[in-house]
Length: 301
Image (cartoon, rainbow, N blue to C red; front, side, top):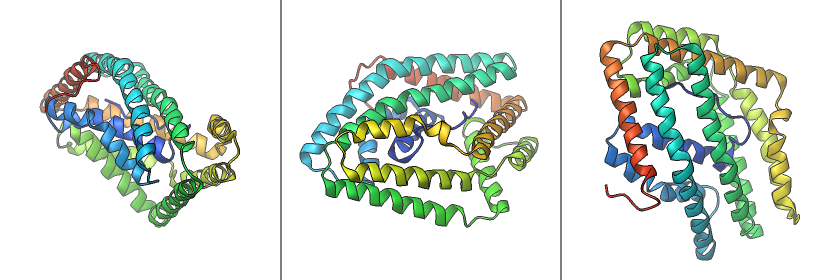
């Protein structure tokens, strides 16, 4: 299970947070049993509403319309995407059997990224349709929260020294990989430290790029032009082309470093770690297969 490169297109604001939410629903089975994963997946609509509430408060009629659109989206996700996740996990087990070949590992990372991108486009349409329901006051609230969160990110992340930045990265890698493998060995921890030292610091680029994006988006939303949804679609479509060359190079470089260090950690797994990893991946695979056959019906915990 190799972390994918972060998509650079729509990984901003609510869309990015909910994409990560669904990805987390896949990871959660590494910490819980099958029934808990089904329960959480079937409560994604509630979790999405909580996230949306962080940005704007909907009235009763707006909430009803949002819920209906979200139900349609999640039904599509269950029918179309969960079977693809099952196939991906089957292939992940084969990759482990084959010794984690580099080409296969890279292809797996690409497939994970593609799955995230497939979700982002329909979720963007959900947000745009919901945005068309908002009053000018609600739109102003949404813009104010976006900028407030931007300032919080800047205050928190830019205050870190380079050493603190890399310490945070090491801790995140250790936490993520330990979920699947258990406690890491000294060799594995050292490999993570070496990989993190090779990574380009991207938080400054990300925050700079995000501020420009929020500023452009806010102007479109507050001007209330009839074609503002098309303007937003066009803004997002040109996101990749608008990235600074150094930022784009850093994303590509870090993606390769992450892939290599994750692969090396997996290759160096102990027999105990291998059993734990396979058990969790198989459990997750079986759980998602069961979810995919529920056809939108609520699972029993």
